[in-house]
Image 1 (cartoon, rainbow, N blue to C red):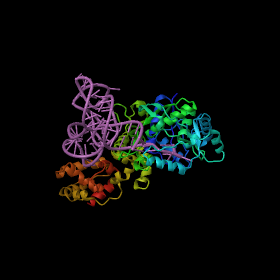
Image 2 (cartoon, protein in one colour):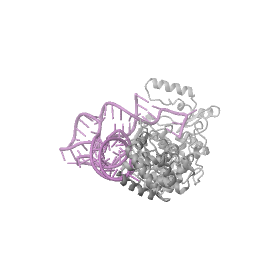
Image 3 (cartoon, rainbow, N blue to C red):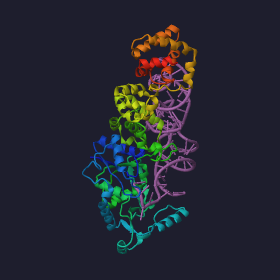
Image 4 (cartoon, chains in turn cyan, green):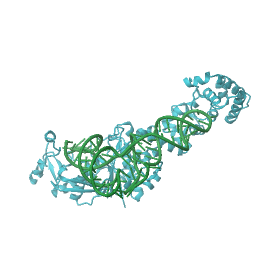
Length: 472
RNA sequence: GGCCCCUUCGUCUAGUGGUUAGGACUCAGGGUUUUCGACCCUGCAACAGGGGUUCAAGUCCCCUAGGGGUCACCA
């Protein structure tokens, strides 16, 4: 049984990189018939943002990546929030001290800073100078009762750690380069490294799928597994998602915020689809996938090693493809919040569906709707430059009266009937194509672009159509 | 700077020794259309550079360059 986990820290909103990590974990779990666990890594009390956990869970849910186990969900391996598991980490830390693989360190922050500064001045790799590692053990144990301390990993001074990564292949790390990592902070909370290893072990995680920024800490983690006498899981590190400047995409950047995209009305399945392709591809030419299809196609071995730039334009294209495939009624439902403060907010459902149907195939985001629906406005807008030119043309001056004349002769016609006589009017005055239809479009909407006239006329109604044409 | 990693069109990528280096987005041109989308067609555009190995290299090796990650009592 494969068990994977997504282990974010609740320091803010879910970002795009995190969502992709969650997605690959989810896909791998579903693909292998395994379990997808959510674990909250809230060991940093300073950066903790209240409410972040709930919003993380909500975002995952919206995107369809609902965990099988996790906080508020349940499971046999809980609790799934690290701050509720402190005892377990202390026990592990004690075990490491007992076996001589970890030691207390009493160095002050000031001394650490000083050491680091000197090392950097000398051009050396910055790292702890292991002063407290030389302390007599019984003396150190005694000092722990009265002094503040951290617990550090006693990294072997030589040798190397061999690592086979599911994505990166063979990567080996000389132990001489590995720092005596802090495992327990002076506030009694574990650092990521300890908590992560202990939890992955106790939650029986079989595959750790996480961002490339963790690759460099693999030797520390592997050492921890060894010292704790636990068989390590398999690791797969994912290439970074980059911004346009090719730097690690951060959540502070607009494009990096999952909530930001959702708020702008990108369909969650579209975001998921796009993000799946950042660092992975199915090996054929298909590009539009839903979650189920991604699950079927996903393979860890097709994940890349190089970082990929997040391209909002391509996301837009994928989003549009999803809108074209979605049901109009479904889109109309999702559109309501985006139309709430517009004149379209009060529209009856079937009318709204009709309107949205006319712009659906050009939609990228729901927040484009107020603009795209403008041609349907009950208020005739001031015509723009192009529109005025059409109205002022000689063609318009003959075409519009001719159409008006025909329209007036009709008795409560529907949109199709109105359209039929437009053609007749055109024939009568010898005008067709764009010269015939554009003056009419401008007269109806004040704009030179928009959805098809049939829907616009249907929405306006006979009276208003006549009214607008008369004013030209 | 040390260590680790990466490098095919502007972007996402296919490619596992023999290809006219393929696809997608973007962009440009054309077609279609009752305008704009959408749709269809065409086009522009890449193996970072240099050495090897080989009959043959985008594919293997080395070097250089560029880029990134990491060097916290943050994750």
